[in-house]
Structure formats: C-alpha cells, structure tokens
Image (cartoon, rainbow, N blue to C red):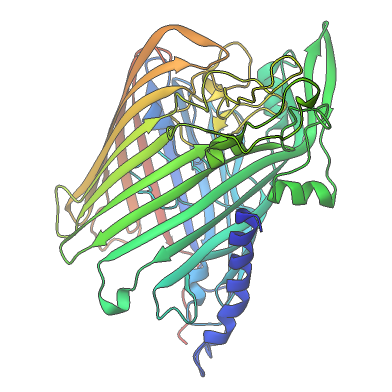
Length: 533
C-alpha cells in the first residue's frame, strides 16, 4: 500500500475508533451553542520608507501588504470548539472581515467558517487560520509546505486536531492529522497583477493532507517524545492561460471529476500533454514535506530538535529514482536493477529552547535552511539518444502549468522563498528559491502584561535554476516587537492590547534597504457570556 494512503487511512480509522474509549457518564452537559462568543477589533498602521520589511509582512496569514504605507481595520466574532470541552460533540464558528488601505483588495474576508466536532474528529467548512505544526508559531521562519504566510484557502477539512492515543499502546502512540479540499480565490488578483500578459490560472482547486505520529507518554512522566509526519498539498483542476504568438491561449484545462480528486490525494495520472510520454509527471502541482521533532520537556526547561525536508516530486520525496533502462530499441524498457540516489539536502533544521520560569528570556529558536539542490541542476528524462534517466531542477514553489505555491501573491509555505508579490514584471513566480538562510528568534515577558519578540535572518540567494542571478545576493531581515496589555478595572480598557514593531531589510533580494514601523491596537472580549452548567 502507498505510504501516504496508509497514513491517511490510519487517521480516519483513528477518528472512528476513538468513540470506543469514552468514559461512561461523560459529556452530559447541556449544549449552549450561543455561549462563549468573543469579539475582536483590530486597527493596524504600517509606515515604511519604500517596501514593508519582511517580518512586518510575512507569516500574518496574508493580512499584510508590501506598500510603504498600509493599514486595516478588522472586526470579528468567534466561538471556539473549546467552549464545548467535556461533551461528545461541539460547535464552533467565526467571521473576520477587514477594510484595508494599500492591500491587494479593499475588503478582505479573513476568516469565515463553521465547524463541528464529534468525539475527536473535527469537520470544518470555510476559511480558517491554522497554526504551524511542529514549529514555534511566533518565532519560526515558517513551514515549507503548510505555512501561515498567505490568506487561508476556503476548504472542507476533516481532522484530528489534537493527538489521539491509539488503543492498546499503553499511552505511548498518538495520531493527529487532516484531509482537506478547497478552491483558490485569487483569480481577479492574478488578472490584475499579470494584466493578462503572462501565465495565470483560474478556478484552481486545492488539496492538503497531513499525518503525524507521536511516541511518548506523559502519564509515566517521561520527558522525551518524538513526533514524525508527512505533509502534502496539491493544486489541480482549473484553467491555465499564457500568451502564444501575441494571443491569450488556454493551454491547459485540468479535470474536476472524482478521479482527479483521488489523484490529488494519491498522486497519479499525468499533466495535460504529457500522458503516454516517457517524461510524464503526476497530475497537478504536487509538493510536501517530511517532518520530525524530538522533544525534551523538563520541569524547568525544555528543548526540541526538528527537521522539515521539502520535496516537489517523487525524486526528492523518496530520494531515489529508477535508472535501469536499456539501450537502443530497449531504451524505454526496464532492464536492470539500478537506481539513482539523490543527495540528502534541502532541509529546514531547527533548535528550540524553552525556559519555563524565564522572564526576559523564555523562548529561543534557531533555524538553518538549505534549498539550493532541488534534485540537482540537470533535468533529463531518457530519450532514444540518451538512455540515462536523471531528474533535477525541481524549481520549488513554481510550476510549468499552475501559478505555483502561492495565494494572492504570497507563498503558502516559508516566506524566505521570495513571494511573487515582490515582482515588478507581472510574472507570478518565485524568483528566489535557491538559497541558504540562518534564522534566529527569541522572546520573553519581563512582566505579566508586557512581552516581546526579536527575529533576525541572514540569507544568501542564487535566484532559480531557470533564471539565476548574475552574482550571489545577500539579505538581512530584522524585527523588534513589543506588546502591552494594561492591567485595569476599567471595562473599556479590559482586553486591550497595543503592539509596536520595527522592521528592517538590508540587501538586494527584497528590493534593497527597507525599514518601517507597525502599530497595532486590538480589543477583545466576551460578546455572549458563558451560561452556568
């Protein structure tokens, strides 16, 4: 059985099996679906000299802008599933909308979703922000596959949100994960950005899945745990357009039948125009990451070591490719037990330290990213003249048919891959995906109502294999940010937060030298009170 199918099947089985482990007499509280609704009002202003610095723009779920002056007013209401904790089922919903200035659209529906939980399984419908998995949500540079840099994609998502303990393992094995299908919403932005003079895609469908296995047992006070998983995503369906001989041509139209949904889940089939050829690729824009995290959780401190191994096709996914074809008339026949082993490169490697009783310093994250290899600089599928089968130039986050791993101009993975929104030539593509980066983040809380974080990133970029830079480029990105919540008895001030950030970019990857300030004022509180049970 395909390993991806096995992981996802186990996930669904776990959701069903969990019903057998509920304690008798639990979940007898009366449902209160209108209780515990919270509200949020945010106002943010960003002022920069030229372009908004990286860490004032990135990893904000796409609610951000590169314009030198921009801002928004956001209003939202939400009821979390946690309000129904202790019941067999739960209901959650949320709506957030913003009026913006200097953004890609004047009005943004940031979140709009409803979700229901039965035991441990959660079904969510709509646009919802999901945090990073196996990484620090505020200090990490971001996940390479399922990041938080772009606007949420409206989707139907079935998930085990929290780890579920597998019966019969004495509390040592746990599973979580999700399966989701959705649709991209940036068609109009693509039309405007490209002026319909370069490649763009309409009506593109979205698929993501992930499965994580955790080995550890908190009940026996074991401080060690190991988390391992697979994250995958795919863009499929839709129509792709480009200019051919001065004419706008629909050069590819993807399928939307049940078979296409299945081939998005288990990669298969072939791209239009490639079926039956020796060099056919799986249908859609397929990508993913192998992820792992080793944790130590002590009484006073803890640390984690983690890895995120990115891939764009089967060669970089499995690190192995068949290379045993014959010669002459047997050029396309498998004749030998011969395989090509790719180098183990293109990692995000991280270290996280946590000081549980720390004040000025509580969390430290250090990450190293290497993306230069991409299965090597040569792409060649065997032909009648050359039988050797070599794959390379995977061209991360870009695709020959679709507009790549982006949404509304922001990459949907790690923002150190330069987002298309930075481009000034109207091309929707990542122009810097071969780089080495060192990232440091640390945070603390000198007082209960004051916290801060600092991010610092050094990056060396080579462009792409297809369009390399004429010389190696460098970039340094910095962020200093502090938040204050007043301690007061005044009702109108309760739940207020003021946050001020200063960001800087130096170098030639992100439009030169950028610096700017970002001020955020937020107010949260209860819209409907919790009714006593």
